[in-house]
Amino acid sequence: MLELRFARAPAALLCAAILGGLWSTSLANDGDESATRPVLVREVVDGDTLVVRVGSVDRRIALLGVRLTQAGAADAECFLRHLLVGERVTLQWDDRAAGADALGRYRALVRRDPDGLYVNQEMIRQGYAEADDAAPFTDLAEFKRNETAAKSAERGIWGGACRVDGFVSSGAAIDPTPTPDTTPTPIASNGKSQTPQPASDADMVCVTKSGKKYHRPDCPSVRNSATKRTLPLGEARKRYSPCSRCNPPK
Image 1 (tube, rainbow, N blue to C red):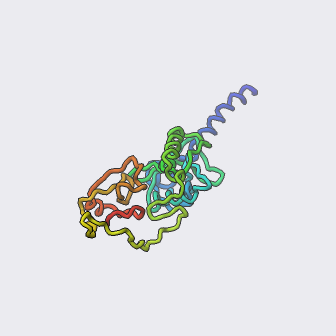
Image 2 (image 1 turned 90 degrees about the vertical axis):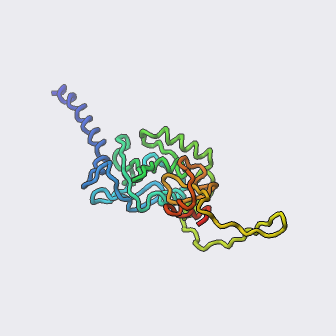
Image 3 (image 1 turned 135 degrees about the vertical axis):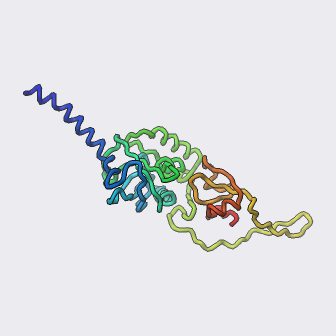
């Protein structure tokens, strides 16, 4: 009888481990949803927490591998709102980080739909958070490299005060009232003033793969983007809105 009891123990432990690993995955299967089907972002709570509708239930999701700094929490929330408000995402679960955390959030790797932006990584790559090694997961080493690169490039919170299109570091909306143009009128070599030339549809501006704004080529918002590309202003006007930070031609 004693031998039988010990023989059953490994099987019981294995069963518990399997059930624990499936706990988080089951969230993605509530109702009609699956782990590969986009779900709606209902709310961005803070810089590493969002609420999504999974099936017929709202779930609080924490960005796995993302750790906020106290000083940069407001900037991180601002940036996450910029990325996800009104968007759909797909959730990927890692069995090694299964179950809810102390705040009742389920940790997941989040990708924006339909462009596939890896939100967890983007928060760190753009300098709005640190790589969190509290729970091991597949991309931890890459996240740590992203954090080191962001610090070296002084991106996001590592560069001081931050500002994202439409927001400042406090999270408040930018005053829409335009600032009066006090730029002196250029003077030609003959001493006569020159009238600035109006923007042409052929002028070149910059956009990014996942962005919704077009920018001046030297705009800090796209300066370090790996997906930055240029296109004529006339084409950009049809598909994008102007960046409020660098104020490109409209």
